[in-house]
Image 1: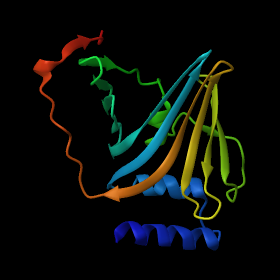
Image 2: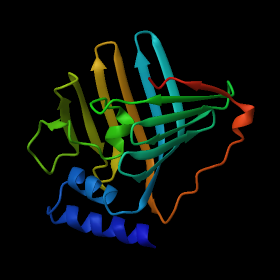
Image 3: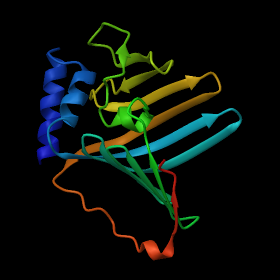
Length: 190
């Protein structure tokens, strides 16, 4: 019921032009609830392409989980834990403060983004990340105003996109438990 109410409020605000889809998206992420998005992830690097579908859970600031059939990636502050079910490996790595991924952007991290277009009514919001020389865009559904896609262009041979199939607020999230004795542990933290 709460999800229907949030979507209704969002739609009314868009109809009256009081809020842009991008501002509404960030506002929704900052409500203090857990957000689940069903997403399709696509990455192209030179002649290689990778696709994945799964659930993205935004649990809090710098705290999110991407869960697919083949792997689960858990990000909490600067620690990244990747549990690969196909290779039976758990990889621990750290991320630098200035490092930014498309999942970071989807989770609401915007301090490094520089938005290019001024129109609040547009369904496409383009951005640059000057420190990394990346560019990208948010795309919103014209009818509902809900987020539809995020694209990130890293260079001319590498781009990443996420299509958001659904988004909703949750009351809680329970992290699945894995028997780490069944996995090879790889620690890449320096």
